[in-house]
Image (cartoon, rainbow, N blue to C red; front, side):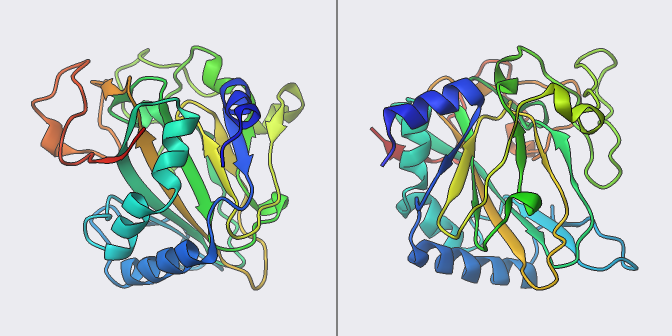
Length: 267
């Protein structure tokens, strides 16, 4: 289901759209899991919309071992194979899953960022699969800066709740440029998505997104994060997200061979 041209687009642009990659069965499985997750949030769940505002921007992650639906999707859907073939890996491990929900009339943006500085992972055979469960018009979906994964830069991670940089060691990473004020300087990728479509993007690809200004349609997305052959442990100059305290004994460059990250697919 993955063509050579799609793999080339991923490596060149840092993000690629895959149409009709998942059938309705998997969307239904995830929808059921998300509703269970909302009723039983995990320790990392966060509500970004103030109580006085309309809508609601909510996320939660690292719950795949709590919900059968998430586990079924990660181990049995096409997702792991898509990640393996896109990253040209011999085997692929799940790093973590992440649900991001924007209810109708949500004004809160997803700020511009890239994921790898948040993560305790170094390597290039890494990707996320962003799978919406609802139709997402271009005006409400994620946007990507084409080629930013190949800039050779790591930008300071920001907290979504405050938009302030993490308290990393000063000078460890660059501050993010003001992309929104200089949009004409970048090639910005975005797409209209129907249920079953997904976007695969590199951990270093800069991305962000508007609120969900629809008056009726939710924007539920299940993002699965995958690590391939060259992924190793990275010691960051501050807290990571997810925190993974179980890796306290790991050192820079250690293989990420741990029960937290089971192998989901082999070539």
